[in-house]
Length: 157
Image: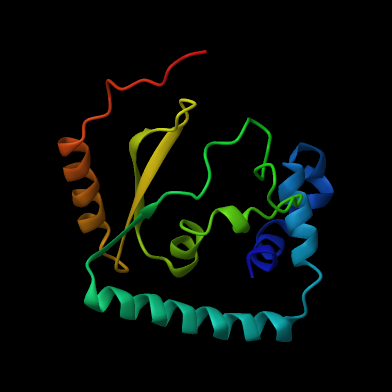
């Protein structure tokens, strides 16, 4: 669905903008153009079922706390971590904590919680029920107040 959306949103721009677009976005757009409408409609039904399942989770819980991502920060220009499946545009394998809420439309915020042993930043994701953006932002603000990080700096090499 992601690539089909990107194709629908930006595919018409490829003739004029291809050379100025991110190569990963171009590959994603081209992949998305290969799907048939009946495949897309089936995926929409799956997405609706997924969003309903997420909504049920938030009938029992106000917030869900997870790591922001499952890996440390990557070098500039690198899309996937070493040792993970390499793909020219698909980063879903290692972003399994964050993209589900983008997909479902639930609000989420990432707040700093510290650094790895090598000095790279680590984030905590706070996700909430759909349209409860204020509650997510209040939780993020409360966490930052309890765990101030503005003065924390990673070790420089």
